[in-house]
Length: 275
Image 1 (tube, helix red, strand yellow):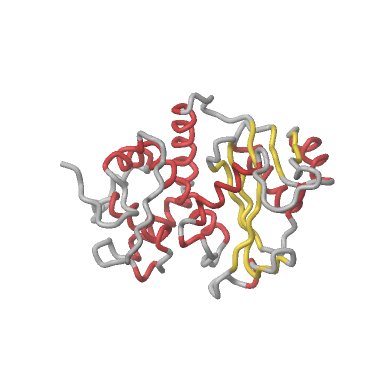
Image 2 (cartoon, one colour):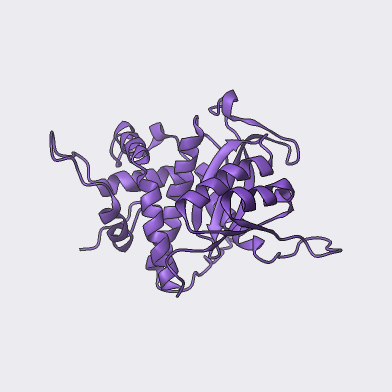
């Protein structure tokens, strides 16, 4: 019998069927797990989607301390990386692509930091006039998240990209990366020399005025928009950058499970006007 969803962020039965086999096996020793794992995952996704504090989880979820314990334990075991990789392969295969990408797109996003963000990991982005953190993400050409690195907003794009490109090199076969002009300069030679990766700078058309969709770059910008639709990511609330990265991966996992189980093209929700 299908399980009724309590909140829009809850997994459907089909989505849970994708996630459940990818979670670590329960410990064979000690007391059996008290709370269903599906409730744990739904609680994590509720926090990511609504932006509420852990302590403010609704009472029909397991205790917040239990949910956070699983969140931290799974992150230490790199569970989100493993789930994301499996789901990404399935999405790509469903689109008729090779399971592993060879090309990607990199971009950065500066977001304001809440008062819970410590001084040791926050900074000021003078260009965007934002005090907080900067997210560097790399996606494949479908916009699916490959790697994410979170740093202080004061980190220059060319410097933060080195860590991101190194992670991309170690975790994926991607060796051709598209980027905007903020990543131009010595970084291009560094990527070619150290990582054997081609960093292709996609510039605006000469004389462009106003908004225009730029080839290749729009894919990663759309991915950033998808991610920041999750309210926990609209601002950075996490004390440690590693936890902020985990939140972004959970948001990406949520998006890929919906994409795999939707069965049809996305339909924009109708706008209701109350008169």
